[in-house]
Amino acid sequence: MRTLNGKNLAAAIRAQAEAEATAGPQPRLAVVAATADEASLWYVRSIAKAAAGVGIACDVVDLGADADAGQIGATLSRLSSDPQVHGVMLQTPLPAGASAQQLAAAIDPRKDVDGANPLSLGRLAAGLPAFPPATAAAVLALLDHYEVELEGRRAVVVGRSTVVGKPLAHLLLDRHATVTVAHSRTRDLASVTSTADVLVAAAGRAGLIGAAHVAPGAVVIDVGTNPTEDGGLTGDVDFEAVSGVAGALTPAPGGVGPVTTALLLRHTARAANLP
Ligand code: NAP
Image (cartoon, rainbow, N blue to C red; front, side, top):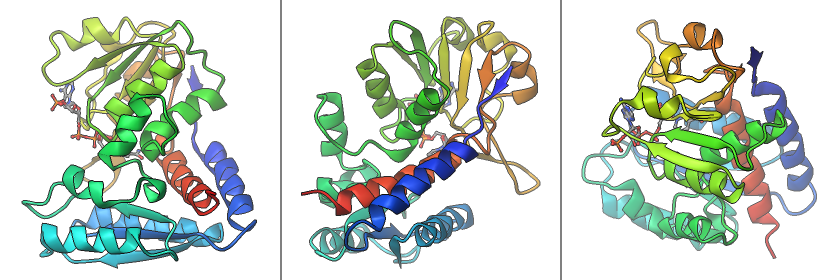
């Protein structure tokens, strides 16, 4: 079984981001957060650190867990119209009553480097240029890096969120895969996932995908990041069990995650260079 590590690919994408970032005026990314969730704030800090490493300025706009939807929306609008800011990202979770999907409509699509504005998803679905959500793009980047053939192959995506499952289904369709999207109401999940040549788990349920869910030799991409009791993270795939059946499998963490952050930076560098 091949382990599809994301770290080398992430380093290559960061190098591209750095080359693009240093070719013109310094790109600036603004990350808006309104949460006390430690894991989420840790992720925001890791983006800021990675941005600094490739010559991208990153402002973390922390509105605090008490911010309301009006404040968050106004902040996104202000950053979207600020010519000094090239990329705008809204971090989740948000306070109760604030909808990420509704608020992300305030992000200028040209600065929507994490593909959160519903217009970006619509453009993606229509085959028009748009920034895809970095996580969905990271899955495709990993499949391409490891030269996994997609054309005419059966791909099953477990999860239908607007940040991962749905945009990924469109990206896979664009690459001529035959795509099935499974979700929490799917009956007999294993009978669906075991038809996949390429299986992507993005449900946020630790250990959801076991050996019985995977066809022999399938390529399995684990998007899940689930907190463990000891303070670590684990994926949606039972790595031990599935590595005995799959042909290739990403580790989680260490697979999709680092590629996601690197792509967010490359999108920001590209946004800064848009004509
Ligand atoms: P989400 O919004 O909670 O969506 C989860 C999806 O999985 C939903 O469509 C849900 O179905 C489906 N689902 C839940 N339980 C299921 C089950 N037992 N069987 C089949 N489908 C099930 O989560 P998300 O934001 O898409 O994130 C998914 C996972 O990816 C999370 O672990 C998240 O932390 C991780 N993630 C990782 C990265 C990264 O860079 N590595 C980035 C973003 C997210 P329904 O629609 O029917 O509810």
